[in-house]
Amino acid sequence: MLFSITRAASGAGEPPQGVVEEQLPRRNCLYRPRVANVDLLVLVMALKEPAPDWQLVSRLLVLAERQEMKALLCLNKMDLLSADELTEVTGTLDPFPYPYIPTSALLGRGVDALKARLQGMVTVFAGPSGSGKSSLLNAVQPGLSLKTAAVSEKSKRGRHTTRTVSLLPLEGSGAVVDTPGFSRLEFYDLEPEQLPAYFPEIKARAAQCSFNNCFHISEPGCAVRDAVSASQINGLRYEHYKLFYQELLDRRK
Ligand SMILES: Nc1nc2c(ncn2[C@@H]2O[C@H](COP(=O)(O)OP(=O)(O)OP(=O)(O)O)[C@@H](O)[C@H]2O)c(=O)[nH]1
Ligand SMILES: [Mg+2]
Ligand SMILES: [Zn+2]
Image (cartoon, rainbow, N blue to C red; front, side, top):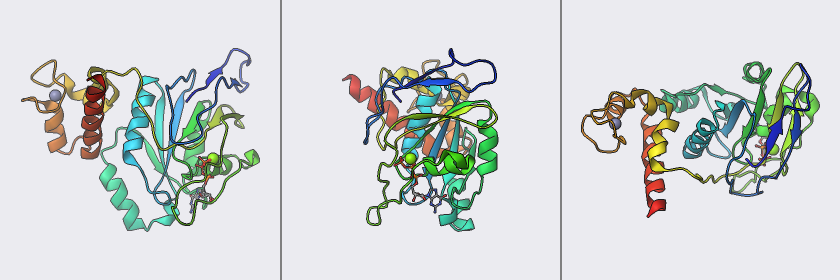
């Protein structure tokens, strides 16, 4: 996210003024994150059309941790899933160390809960093209009238409808930033040793590992791996941790 928001120009109670310093690259890559004064990252992932990319969710959450932003996951397009299918998805996500809400911009489900979370916050909406970021924002505040477009019939992927980053004041208090969709996210200036600190569920248990330099990969007496075995840490999240750790190691070679 290549933009920064300054509160300097706004008075008490007024929405913060936005200054877009640079635009996001349009397609498939997001570079070095430089986000200032953003309180909350709302990560919008469609449950279907396009299919969810959980690894991208974990990547973005690392980014949120690095930027010390709160994070909220919206599982959008819940109307495209049966109740059983939704239960199955939330079952594979749990335990999830961040709040999440199933939403449907189409039916207005979860929109009040989302709206409540945005009050008084500067929030960035991020996620793949076609996941429904602009649609959810329109549902939260119909006056926004943000442009949306159907996903491609054939590939079920988004059409990169939102092309620029825009800061929008919210009724009440707060502001939201709609951003273009992306599907790839690289880590910048990140050493593998720093990674455990950006997975809160790992960070919380690291002190109990036998070795204080444990990186939770294959070391004996690892409290993190024990927690994964006991389903206290989500196995998928742990797989992403290992994947990112290896990626960061490989990059150093
Ligand atoms: N069935 C269903 N369709 C939805 C929902 N939310 C959004 N859509 C549809 O999904 C398509 C893409 O929505 P957008 O809001 O344009 O998606 P976006 O994330 O802003 O996409 P980009 O701007 O390209 O990054 C549109 O046709 C929306 O009507 C939902 O909850 N359910
Ligand atoms: Mg959009
Ligand atoms: Zn460990």
